[in-house]
Length: 181
Image 1: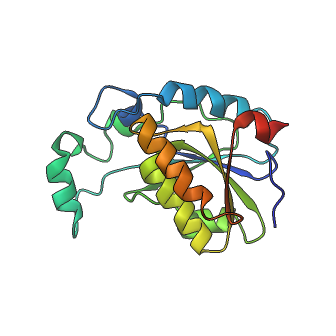
Image 2: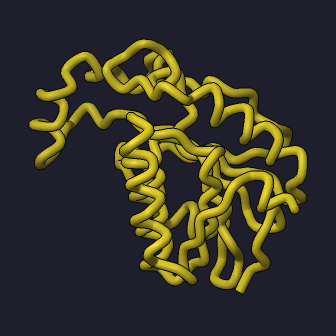
């Protein structure tokens, strides 16, 4: 098993303008999570991985109904709202996906079995949760840094963290201070 703490691979989920700005998908504590991620990046030896949620214009299956609900977010893949809202450190990898979960072949190739994924970003109750569940299903160890994540609401954030903690020891939740201690 990969070592707990900042020695795992840092994965930063969807820290994009669409979630920072006053859109339908605004995450109120985005900037607080971004500040914690910046501190965490200073302690990681391995280059981080950033993900971006980018809408698939085909809207296959139930995605069409989803975007009917969130019509304002029917943005073209090149729209500036999909841009990362945080600076990328040198050597960072960026993975784009039109799905809530960012776990897939690209991330699996970067985080082999036995290496820990240190998970941060937004929204805790959607893309972070989906990514954690898929990574755990793939047999990876996941550490979610609670204060380096933010949810649609504080309540949704706490509920998602509680769900992920139920998967211990495969998925652990911790604070930035405890992780760095």
